[in-house]
Image (tube, rainbow, N blue to C red):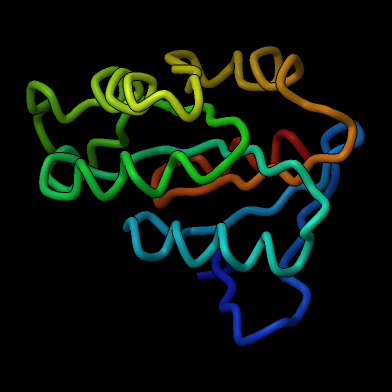
Length: 153
């Protein structure tokens, strides 16, 4: 997919889709905790001075349920987290495996205070207050979040 990049050592990240205000914007397809962790590490290696802000969309309720703690752990590695509702990919909701629950768990761990974005049209509005002027926004997920990245750019 064109929304994915591989980090092979200390190289600049590709693709950079554009800028959202004074922030750099990177769109990545990774939707498994291991992939998200690799993206965060690559971003820190490529742009160590940037404030990492992630817009994340969990993909599938079953994946969110099965990897819940892994997601909660890896998503605390960014400075700010905005989370969209789970992209269901045809699945029915699973109680406790939704974005609201995941945000609550992350918040209770005390490292960051995630922002649940229930309306994708509000992403830009909800993103603005967390930007510092030296940011790298990572748009992460396999659902329709890539459309939002293109909109922001």
